[in-house]
Image: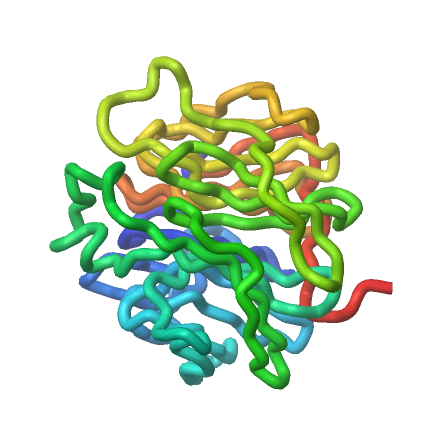
Length: 295
């Protein structure tokens, strides 16, 4: 089902309690954070920031935005007021802030894909030699109040979506170029070494770049992974095996989120057609952290 259309390269869906949605529109004609009505029709532009990518909302209704051009982390209000809160780590500027989520410790976790967007996709088109580029992908942890920043993982080939799994024992991270979903044991002290949880590339994937983008867990423990270029949401079982693949109408799904209030439906942003597609999946989403410290 097409829930919303007429969007310009959408990403970063966030469900709001009233049934409306926040999304980014990465297309150069907009470069904004937008709100889509609960009916999927009304669209309100909140703010133009450049090329926003990932979104997350905290319990204070503050929107945190991974901005890829210029690379930075933005904090925004629902009325559209925004400010850049950080644009670098201790060892240099951010390259490509991509996606983000809150953890059980109240901290904000976000990925940097490890290459500037303008170098990865000059003119908006992914380079033909994308597989051979030098990626310095990272996972960061940020204290949203003090803005203290630390690097938790690096050396990742285009870090993308991330999510905490059931029980908050592990952080899962998409590595787009390899097709792998990486898993890290999590504690308040940091992350353990990376292990490969699963791979989402289909044996019959089309030519060109195919790889995992945004991810979201169902309450049943399955992991839903949008696979850009492959045109599907690949569902990984708790053991990392491929349970099923949900075909999208467009070939470029970018991110996935569950609806609110136990709605057993996923909403998928799709770049090629500028839509949000919706699919009934038989499970609600694993509840997301919102910046409060879990008990």
